[in-house]
Each structure stands twice: as C-alpha cells, then as structure tokens.
Image (cartoon, rainbow, N blue to C red; front, side):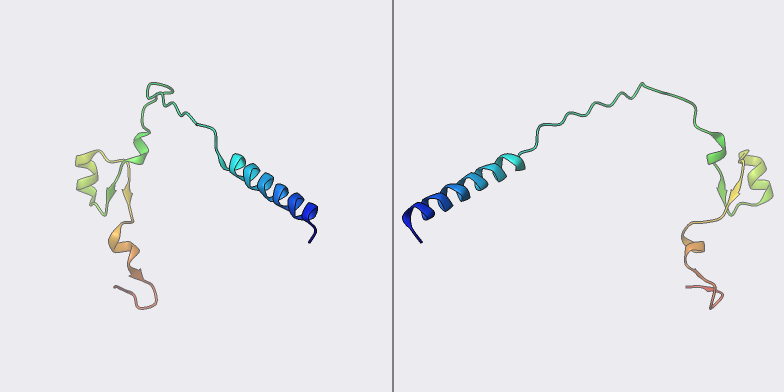
Length: 83
C-alpha cells in the first residue's frame, strides 16, 4: 500500500474512532417527580378478601371476594390437585 493511501486510511480510522466516541456520550437527563400532582382517592373496588366467607366479607365491608394468590396459581387442572 502506498504511503499516501496508508496515511488516508489512518486518518479515516482516527476520524471514525473519534466520531464513535462522541456519539456514545449521552447528554445528562433530569427527572422531576411531583408527588402532590394529580392526587385522587383510591378506587374502593380494588380492595377485597381472598377466599373469605360471607361473614368475613360483611364484617370487613369488603367489596369483593377474589380468587388468586399462591394456592390457586399452583392448581393443576390435569391432575385436579394442588401441586
């Protein structure tokens, strides 16, 4: 390779290395959280009891009796038993 071609190649590689380094630097980012913004009451329908009886629901004034949690997520419908 001729000396001028080698010099041009070296200059091009140096330029690309510098450009890649500049492109990799991210600008600083600031995040602000306003805990007082858009306050509203929590929907009472999200509260509930897991596998509660009728008396439990009435005593707790719970809006719903939900299914779910550890025991129901381990239920195997093919063997019809908890695993």
